[in-house]
Image (cartoon, rainbow, N blue to C red; front, side):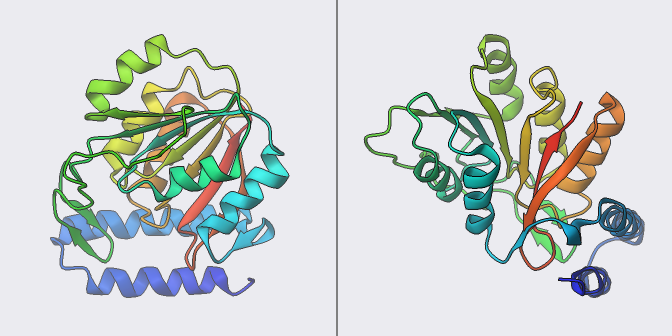
Amino acid sequence: MRNLGNKVRAMMKGALRRTPLPPLLLLEKACWGLRFNEWLRKTACEGVPYFQRRFDLYAYLSQFVLKGVAIDYLEFGVATGESIREWIRLNTHARSRFFGFDTFEGLPEAWKHVGGSVPKGTFSTNGQPPLVENEPRVKFVKGLFQDTIPGFAQAFQPRSQLVLHMDADLHSSTLYVLASLNQLIGPGAIVLFDEFDSFDDEFRALDDFVSAFRKDYCVLGCSGKSYAQVAIQFRR
């Protein structure tokens, strides 16, 4: 585990060298890579629980952090539903609620991350939410976040521990969700990022959000070979 920081730095350097992006965009990404490296050092991630598989991180959070309490689980970027199904399996509390937000038509724009570019429409399920049978606790909210979140946030009444699962990939989408739900993201709220090692997208969105709204948080755990998944809990 102590060598993981060095591996992450080597990964970033290699990805930046291979990325076929315009020089200014590449420079911007390199700068965020340096900030990500500094974040790793300051937050001492190598001292928090680490897992190879993201499902093992989910299980740790469910058993040792949440300890089986009822949760309001909001997932942004559902695709085929692997993550939300796993959380439904892990948390069986009758009062838990699970909401999945997605267009189910794939990425709304090309995802130009370090290492390459993923075309618009990738991750599409042809507009169809995943099938979750015999589970009245789950609801899928179909549409662009900008179209669905304002109305949801206005009507939503939290009643349990808040858990946000961020898998929107894009910086713009991730930042929009966090900013739009700022009133809900208070002390104790848990946020799990699925592509955190895309340091100019999800990591950057968190950094922007924390700076703009004067938030503070601690790291609960991480997984993946380069901190791909990171779970945090807000302190204010």
